[in-house]
Length: 176
Image 1 (cartoon, rainbow, N blue to C red):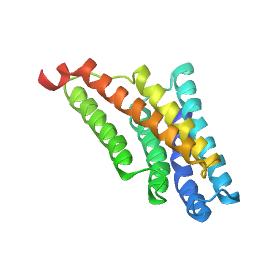
Image 2: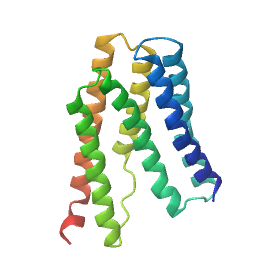
Image 3: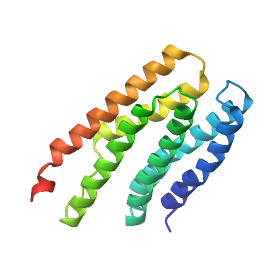
């Protein structure tokens, strides 16, 4: 197993720790919330570190290609689900995010079945980064309603835009 994949596994291991801390916070700005924010930031940083190591040292593997985006999705969905439980993020927003993730993953699976690899696009990377940063802002300032609403707006726009872009650029994979 590569070093990059081990770092990705660390990100996955952070998710239950993050969830427990978020539950303990009760959605309130307290020590537990800030501890969960610290874990979320550490987990998010591993996304950039494992990608850098994989590219720089030629550690790109099929396992890493599978696990890295899965770890990202699980971390983001864990945070959004907690905010949804506390009625900060509407359920329909979480559903749009989940739908985009399943749809793009399905498109990639169809493409791989036809011998085509759909690499992560720039808009997908922007979506991931803005979502992770936005969720950090929401954890840092959970009681500032307008700020949480703005973050949700950014998450929605980048999620929908990147999802539509993936399908426009790779539509032929579905019909070949």
